[in-house]
Figure 1 (cartoon, rainbow, N blue to C red):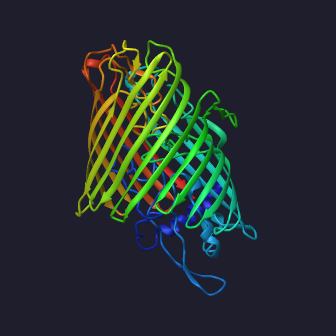
Figure 2 (cartoon, rainbow, N blue to C red; figure 1 turned 120 degrees about the horizontal axis):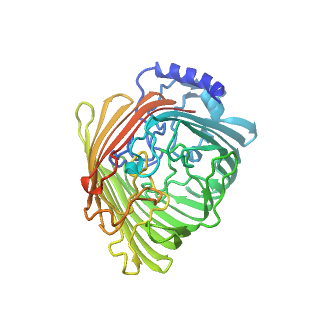
Figure 3 (cartoon, rainbow, N blue to C red; figure 1 turned 90 degrees about the horizontal axis):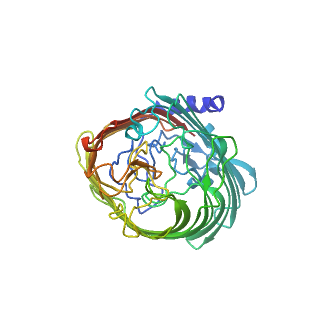
Length: 508
C-alpha cells in the first residue's frame, strides 16, 4: 500500500508549492456549527481527532472535451469516507492522479471511486488508568492502513445503486500493557454495505444495508472513534432522508464484535439497537445553527461498578442538541436522558454538555472557549435504581479515552491558536470531579478505574492538554497531542496519567 501511495505523496508535495490555499468551504448551507476546541487536536465540527479535513489546495484551470473551462477540484475529505460524493468529477477526472482515482468510468452511468489512508503514530502511556492494571512506560508504535472503494450505478438525478467496501488493517508494536481491540485489528471489513438512493424533488431517500460507520450530532451518542488505532462500525439497516433543511432517519441492527485477527470481526447479536434521528438547519454562513434529536433503544449485557455483576441492560437514550455560530460566537448545548432497566434496577441517568467560544480578530486568531460536562453518576447504590450514565458509542473526553463521562463533572477553559496557514494549536486545563461520591470513576468503555468507596472526595484530578496539527499539503497532516492528569491526593496510591502522541496521516 505504501508503494501504491508514493506517486500521490509526490503529487501532493507539488501541490503544496503552489500559492497559499483558501479555507475549505462547508459542503452545504447552513454551515455546520464548529464547536469550540475540545481536548482533541482539532475543532469538533465534522472532524475527529487527527482526520485530514484540510484547507483547499491550489487550483488550475481544466478545459473539458466541449471547450468549457473548469477549476481543478480540491480535496474536501469527510471524517466518514462514505459521505464523500465524486459524481461531479466526470468532467475533471483527467486533472491529476487523484481525480482519476476519484472518478473511474466503468460503463455509461457507472463509475467507481478509490480512496485510502495511512497513519503512523508513536505513543507514550505512563500511568494508564491512573496506575490501575498493567503499565507501559517505554512507548509503542501504531500503524493504521485503510483502503476503500465503491461502485455507483445510475445518474445523480435519478434512482441509483451503490456498493461500498472499506478494509482496515491496524497494528501496534511495543505495547506492554493491555493491548485492546482498539489498538490491534488486522485486515478486516471496517465497512461493507449496499445502498439504494431515490431522489424526491430537491431531497432524497437512501436505504443502506450492511456494515457502516455512524457519526451523528456532536458525536456524543454515535462517534466513529477516529482517535483509536481501529475505527468503529456497526451492522445496520439505515433509512436516511433529506428535504431542504430537514434531515433524519431510522436504524436497526447491532454493533460489531471486534477481534484482533484477520477477517474475524462479527456481528454482536447479543447487543440489539434501533433508533431515530431528526435535524433542522437554520440561518446561513456566520449566523447559522442546527437543532437535532436522537433516540436510541439498546438491549445488551452491561455492568457499571466493581461489585455487582453485569446484567441485562435495556436502556433508552434521548439526546436533544442545539449548536450554532453567531458571528465570533460558537456554541453547542446537548442534554441526554436515559431510562429503562439494568437487571432488577431501574435506570435513571442523564448527561449534559455545553461548549462556547469566542474568536478574536487578531494575529494568530485566538479563540477562547469554555466547556462544561455533567454525568449523573449513581447517588445511592441501595435505592434500587441505577443512576450511572451509560454512553453508547461516544467520542472520548480525551484523545486516549482513559476516562468516561459516566460519573464526572468537568469544567474546562481552552485556548485555540492559528499561528500560520494550516497550523492550529490548542491548550486546555480541566478540573475533574466525581458527580456522586458513591459511584465509581470509569474508563470510556465502562471499566472501573476507582471504585465508589475508594474515597469520600469529589475532586478527582486536574487535566492539562496541549495539541497541534499542521497540514503539509491537502493530503498530508502531521500533529501531536499530550495530556497530563494530576491525580488528587485523596485517590492515591496511584499514578498521574500522561499520554503523548505524534502522528503523520496521509489520505487520498
